Image 1: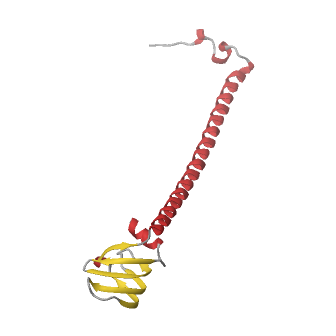
Image 2 (image 1 turned 90 degrees about the vertical axis):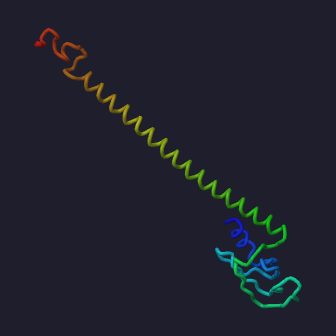
Image 3 (image 1 turned 120 degrees about the horizontal axis):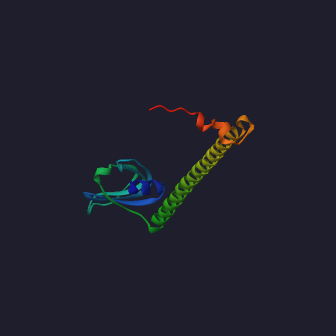
Length: 150
């Protein structure tokens, strides 16, 4: 997909298209699609090697007949910069989403710990306050009173 992104980035710029049959087209890139079909405006085109160039206002070239595109290095550098910015933005958005998720997880864990601590404290206070005493014999009954039959 990289060549298609590159072509979309240089729309409106002058490109040279070399065709598989040896022809050459030079013009302003107006449009391109996913099949690499391109539309050039204000184009000079030679259909075969050695043929004279003809000026055409608008020409449509099918992607299957295109051998290669030539463009200036400044466009490629511009494209690389654009790709890097998009990548940085994507990473920044993912980091923000991950940070918010980790913050949410941290808050959820903190609430769970607090709830567990509160439950444990309530349970302990119920045991400690039963019958108003901390004496195990009163709370659980006398051990002598338990009759176990096997």
